[in-house]
Amino acid sequence: MDLIEFGNGDNERDRLLHFADQLETFLKALLSESRDRRYFIDGFQESYFAAWEELPIHFEFLREAIRFAEPVDFLLHGLSGNQLNFKFKVINHFSTSFANASNNNNYSNTFTNSILFKFMGSLDKLLASIMDAVGAGGAVGEFKDFMESLVDDGGNEQYA
Image (cartoon, rainbow, N blue to C red; front, side, top):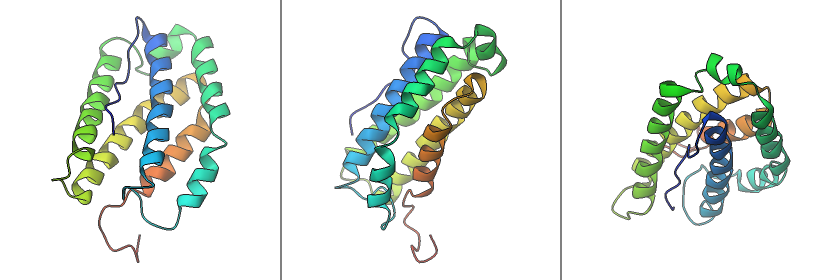
């Protein structure tokens, strides 16, 4: 998978809008690659592709809410200054690690998927803060959460 950088922009609002755009790009690429790679446990592909088709409008709702949020909403939810810088540093660390692992055939699926799981967890934490701040994005967050729960950790699928 190509490296996806999160949080570019000149101010908090632009950085959060970029995050929403890149989250959509990442999830779309991840789903596309899941046709050929084993990121997720079996049995759900048809369902998650169908659910994905309903998400573009929800990404637009999220972006619109970010555009109209008050700056104090960002401040109150740790979405400004050094707090936001730190969050994007963590996310971009896992984005780089996942891109490297997914493009290196020497790594096991379990190793790559463990990075994917951490990466998705870091995305979730920032997305949850944004959703709290702007009051939108719930459908996006739920989809990402359920995809995260399907990451194949190499365990016994009988109990997954």
